[in-house]
Amino acid sequence: RRHGCRGRLEAVDAELVWRAGGAGELGIELGRRVSGGGAVYLDPHQLCWTLTLSGAVTAGRKALTGWMACLGGGVVKGLGQLGLDAVFVHPNDIEVAGRMLACGFIALSDGAVLFQGSILTDLDTETMMKALRVPTEKLSPEGVRSARHRFATLRDLGATMEQDVLQRHLLEGWEEELPLPLLD
Picture (cartoon, rainbow, N blue to C red):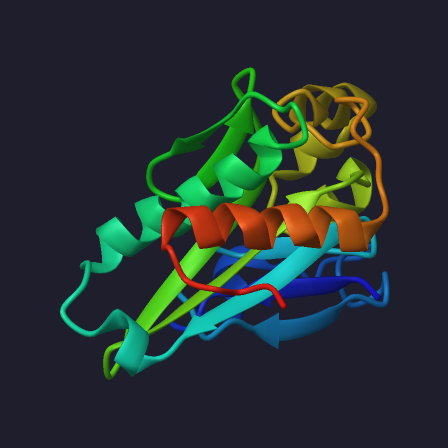
């Protein structure tokens, strides 16, 4: 399924488009993340996650930006195990060679941490741009090609794999960063 997902405080009209050929006509469902941040486009070509850490685990620990750096760092470590030279770029992106490969969003509540994000395994740039609020002139073939160069995908990087392998590496990266046992 394809989804337009917006942050918890964001108005639908601010980021998602319902013009002709836009999200509604493309059959894209809308969802709202509990975490903050701007709208994102999700489709089956992404690995999406929600990591929840309980208040007992997080007591007396980091502020919002510290948690974002820590958990983003875990994604970087997991991708590093796959031979990818990824870096965390404040406030919420994971990049390879200056191109966004993944992003994360975070929420803190009563000492608990919720970390939501996605990694691009592949990308349908044209549909993404039609769903998100992008100026009409950027929807030209040249505009779509230009936007596509801002993103990296695992396919672009020659790192295609089964999602369970990718999930395991992410969990190992988070275990190393936290450190908490997340795997069996």
